[in-house]
Length: 193
Image 1 (tube, rainbow, N blue to C red):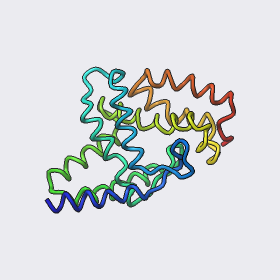
Image 2: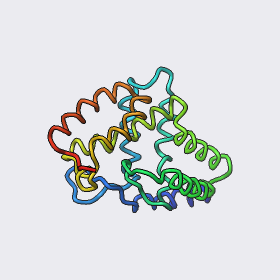
Image 3: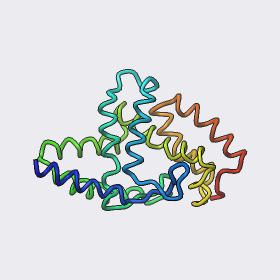
Image 4: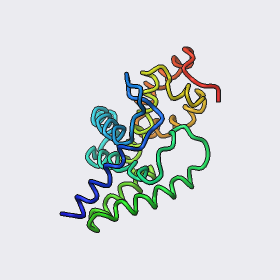
């Protein structure tokens, strides 16, 4: 029991990590724990648009662990350019430490879920990645492009980063977002870079 409790107390630290987007109607930035909850709910809500046979429980498990490494590494804005291999190596070291608090079977399972999400090869991980990449877009669309404008993120940069995983994991979601992003561009919701 104690290793599980130690792990759960450790992952509470995810709540103190700051992301670059604000929850709707609030002046503070969201944290990855809030993000993970919201994308798990989004995945559940979009289940009918997932590839046939996708195990939704497996998707949710991936979404709940995918950002745990940020306890040690901090968050990187989804639209960052460059440095991803180094960031992912740091996250792997972090999740190895954090999941290592658990009994071996659970530690191995959570690490495998994290690695599957990162690889993005299984139908479940493609769907999980699509949902993960969509959420910052959905929030920016709802809040007038807050993080795009604050961080000078261009329309082209957003599309380059989110289109491939969303199109691969949930084509219907990309069809929806594509037109919404075009509307946001016409409204001037993006930065210049």
